[in-house]
Image (cartoon, rainbow, N blue to C red; front, side, top):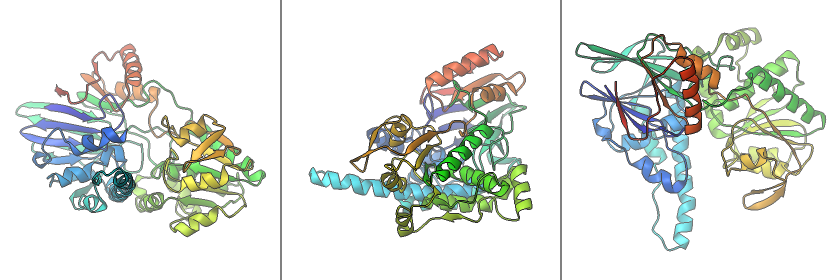
Amino acid sequence: MRITFNGAARTVTGSQYLLEANGSKVLLECGLFQGRRSDTYERNRSFNFDPSQVNAVLLSHAHIDHSGNLPNLVKQGYEGPIYATRATASLAEVMLLDSGHIQEADILFINKRRLRRGLPPAEPLYTQEDAAKVAPLLRPTDYDKPFEAAPGVKVEFVEAGHILGSAALRLEVQEGSRRTRLWFSGDIGRPGLPIVRDPVLPSDVDYVMMECTYGDKQHNDPELAHREFADVVRRTVRRGGKVIVPAFAVGRTQELVYSLHLLIASGEMPPIPVYVDSPLAVNATRVFEQHPECYDEQTLKFIRLGKHPALQFGGLHYVRDVEESKALNERKEPMVIISASGMAETGRILHHLKNNIEDPNNTILIVSWQAPDTLGRRLAERAKVVKIFGEEYPVRAEIATIGGLSAHAGQDMLVKYARAVRSVKGVILVHGEEDAATALREKLGSAGIKRVVYPDLFTSIEL
């Protein structure tokens, strides 16, 4: 069995790993590589293999850095099944269409600039029409039920606890008389996260191939993070302001809505209008509501006691209409507005920031890691003045940041994950920067796991 690392090797984006065995090719993930525009276009359009020769695709979850290049794979000749859990298949369909819309919108802006320079128009990375062609190939699959993805390649989806529908993959590859068992982690979640079940630790395998995004960092207790969230909302409400939250549309938005629901239902927070203002987040939340089989016991109990869905409550409004979104900025009473994008780079959140950032009664709440050179990063670093749509705005609103809400496992959990397999023959680290991988390798070595590899992009390993 051979594995070639075609993405998310020595970086955290564009997950893509080609497994070859018994003359078959099985692709683990087909993520979009995200970075500088000049680097990403050709990288995402060019595969290191012939898509038409791939027999099956296995998808751990729906985040775009794991699923977002499926439209190009299909466009270039892939016609086989794409196996995913039921919730992942539902989310992927929604998210890929949204991604196609973004690609088209971006290229319109780019082509206006190219036209002014006398350059020919460029094509989008893919279109909504391309994205729609992925859905017929999706094969919704139950957790914990083994199936054969290709001759001699048996697969089982196991709860990963990262986002709704996320899964680790237990693979058993039979080549003649030789059997190799591999556990592929996808993205590893954290115990105690709201809504989703806790991650299942690997067992009964020879090798573990796992993410190491936070291999050099610990996380705060999620419960502490949600208490901090409640404190921010309460003090903003007391002074009559709005809480503006840039949040990722899938996972983080639903987590915050659920937390607000618990706080209001328990009486810890007075009822307050909450607006989810992101078309993708609205669509994704509908998918969340359709898949209670992924909920943890606490969420199921809350639904039973409250007699209403976990992501619906009095005072919660899902905003689709652009005019309704604009009207929120004319209103002055306290409210919470959760809007995409999570790093405040695009989308409706920019309009909410522009209209509310100069009022000291308001709070801009940063709830996730912010990449360098983004508006979210400048806010998190307490810039006094920021540019929005090319105009400068003084930052007079309170800026609050909350750590501990990450859906990725921290260092302690990653070590526990790798150590769960007794007498593991080797650990393969992917989906992590070099500093994170180096720190985790040292921790694993101290824990007695000596064979830990961190492969380069486009290299292969024989197992």
